[in-house]
Length: 86
Image (cartoon, rainbow, N blue to C red):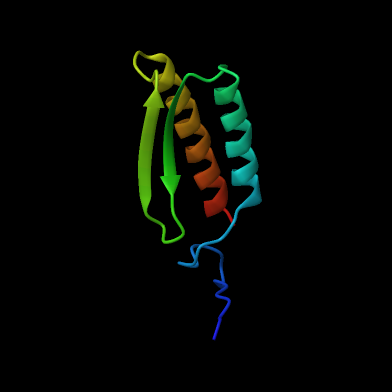
């Protein structure tokens, strides 16, 4: 028996799901890495159960990656504020 779980108000289903926009972004980033254009990555991730984690690879030392993370942080904060208005 297979059940499709859909949350009433959005959120995590606790079931694996393919998010096409995420797959496309990762494919673009992979191509940049294969081309030698991207040489370091620090990523924060969330799984289908809502658990967060992070990964780092390549040249992530120095302050450049921290600047990128701060910009991502600011965008996420704005996104969260927009979601609270719904």
